[in-house]
Image (tube, rainbow over all chains, first blue to last red; front, side):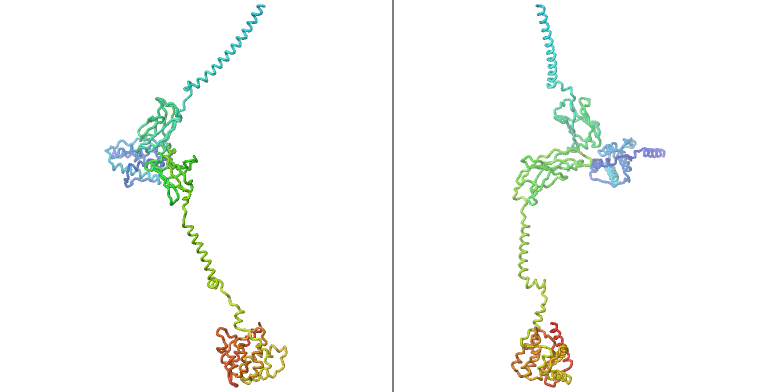
Length: 136
Length: 472
């Protein structure tokens, strides 16, 4: 119980300190997405798409979720932040979101060996978030 | 004297020395000046001026799979590049800096480490010292690969040339949208290039825009047409040539149009001929129906009587006629009173008498039945009527039989028959000028009664004709 309480408090503090992406140059970020990130995502997915679970209703919310899913490795896909689309996303956010910096990511989660479907699912969710960002 | 000569010689020597010194100074100055310019020409002072190390770079994406290339070179091709190298830092994947390889006068690197987002610093380094640096964005200095496989095919049916070419960017991931510049000109004559800009890899050049029977040179190049990737024109593709056909084949004579024209002309001529032939018989009656001519109609109704036939309803005409009473006492009285009136009527009574005469005239056929043949020989009532008609127009059945009277045919029944609308006297096509009822004009023996209604109808008929003649 104490452990869960600490984890909850930690998540709340992390959310409070998270960059809100409101000052980003969305036009340039979306242009970069169309030119490079989208191509890399498609290449990684290789035509495989999963049902979109994550959704967002505004550009800032979408960028927040994209940042979270891209740079916080999930169990089963530790290499996700090192993929080309992730590095380009980071570069886009650094260049066109003033004040954005690479924050310290979760290192506490136990990284297991890479499972392809988990990586594909995560990549598919990120692609869906980008599409929602374009439409919002 | 000797002393004076020595002094003068010394003065001259001093002047000469001063002059010599002046010449020496001038000579030394000229030497110095000529010596400096000579050094500059020799190039010994080359290191004294700063070298122009300005350079240019362009990138090519996905030149070899996922690998991109960066090519840089100095603007001055004569610059000494010994110990100089190019280095790019920033906007790289997983690495801070990359050093370009020297390839003759150019510096080149092929890597997959370009992030394609953000600026990079490209520096010319002499050892560890930066000579000159530039901030570049790899995505904005993209130079596409030159198009290839340029082909020109002449299409005779379309009278044009189909230009096709290939570009390696159609299969690339990043820079896929390009604008192409197709340039062509006659191979001889050094005329200006004609440029055609397009976004696809095929276009057509109309034959009429080209000189006939000429050899053309054509080439194509590309430039990024992307909202994110910018850059420069690619190299020109290898030139291709094509020859235009002779001018006599230019435009391709189309036999359809002259055929249509000839057919139309022939149809028009045929139409005119038909219209001319069928105008009177078919077209004119339909288009322009003829109205009946009143004169002709009346001429058919009333033929002009013979000269001697004098028909009149004037009572004076009946003065010499013996009219006998046929029907009833009233008619007899009227006839008697009429016959008793030998004197011509006074002018005032003319109209009344005329009217009365018409009334009697209506009865005269039956009255004639009682007259003698001599009466008809002298002057028949019909003649009396005709006498007063200047222009008209006794009914045919009246006039045509007048000679019968003169022939002295005493047969009264013949006379009556002449007055009848018999088949011999009446023409079926010619209408009767007034209705004659067969019951009235049937020859009857003296004393045989005729119905009053028939007499009245006959009166109406005569009155109508009288009115018509008067109006005329």
